[in-house]
Amino acid sequence: MIFSTVSLKGGVGKTTVAINTAVYLRHSGYRVLLIDSDANANAVSWFGVRGSEQLNIPTVAIRESKALLKNIRVFQKEYDLIVIDGTPSVDPLTSAILAITDVAIIPIKPSPLDVWATGKFMEAYNVATAVNQNIKTFVLPNEFDFRNVISRETVKVISEMPFTILESKLGNRVAFKECLASGLGVTEYTDPIAANEFANVILEINKSMETK
Image (cartoon, rainbow, N blue to C red; front, side):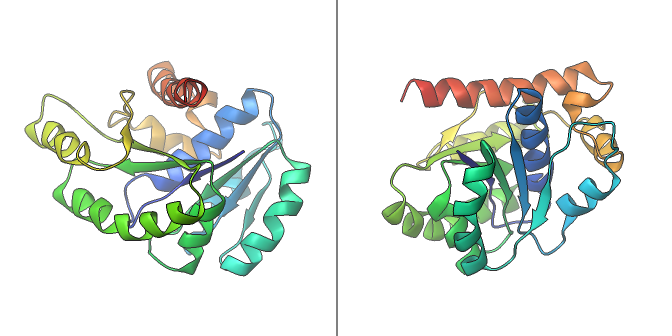
């Protein structure tokens, strides 16, 4: 199975979600490969500082659509699950990622800019779903606080799009940033609240996949 984090806009938490998804799945006993397709290569940098005492999560950079499509078949023979950190743009690489993805996660922060970017992302998404009709897409509210009007309004607008909005949400917690600097995921960090938040995200996705 292939998980991908995708967005037209940078800075929404795409890489953070990809890394933590890979870490959570690895701790669940799966053989996991993390593919970094973002030009910033932050997932690769994260792997570079990850300690040898931690569970190994091989991380490779692939930033060309043909290379991704060619290599993915080989990777699927070697790993149980693959997590792709997508590129924040609409280009052939994004289309290739969506074409092979089983579960797409779209992180979104409470901002009009994120709403507009998600709306523009629909064009690439519609093309991809014509090829990959089995893709399941989930919007993950990130850094949300429903005491704020903008958080509630963002979810309201996104709910009109053909995506499943996860009830599980990530708060604006420093742990998600701190753990990355040490090559960790929140599953391995010292903040049980952040770890539980992320666990709920994956559990909700799994439950949704089982019922469809």
